[in-house]
Length: 144
Image (cartoon, rainbow, N blue to C red; front, top):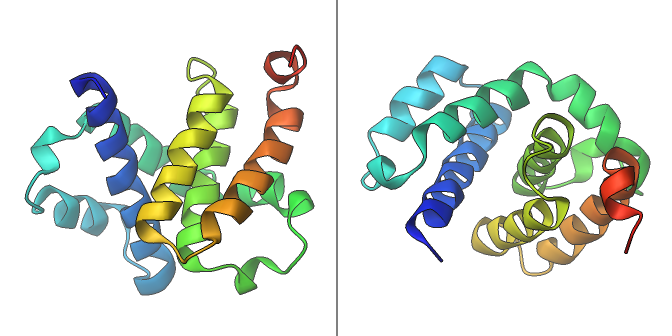
């Protein structure tokens, strides 16, 4: 992985952790940022991407959840907080970051779920994001 790719991956890791903090502990965006910035290794993350993803995902959480819900077979609150956080992040990137290829978003989200989630959570996240890509990235997905 190149250093810019790993910096982007680290930004996504911190964003997922922040989204998790919001869901589990109810922290606001400012508290999440302060906590993240105090973690060793934060300086290796793409700070601009981290802040953008965290802000957009928190600000658009209802819209993003509405994008996700048609593609899940169980109630939102029965999905683990890590999987919810990763799905929200993926939905945010699908919707607001067309410069990032959908396959990269799915791969990143699968890796994040493998890192932070339960044993088979990555399979669930992969399936949901694959279905979402067909809706939110229709033009990009069509040629496959």
